[in-house]
Length: 135
Image (cartoon, one colour):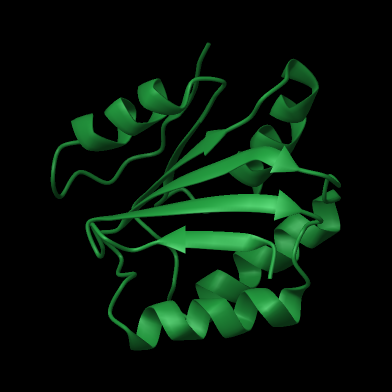
């Protein structure tokens, strides 16, 4: 599967690195189920999503399906920081932000360390919509 998950700080923080093509919805569902069953993702989880090694960009429909599936399975995290490598990849991050419900905070950044600092700076228990970019 083209997604590597680092669960060493879960359920507080998950690190997801996408490599190669965007994963099929079936593969995403399998991975999400494993994370839920393992107690690695909760409504309080913060997720760092690294898209810098993604080969193919997903379309809006693919992203909406991903978010809808996560929501249906109770697997939406508290906050997501999306890391992109090039300005043209920001579009994917913005589409993910647009597909997320207001209960999930999100940012897009070209700097993984800044994205991680943003996730860690969020107060515990605060749920509000944030749309920003850290460039």
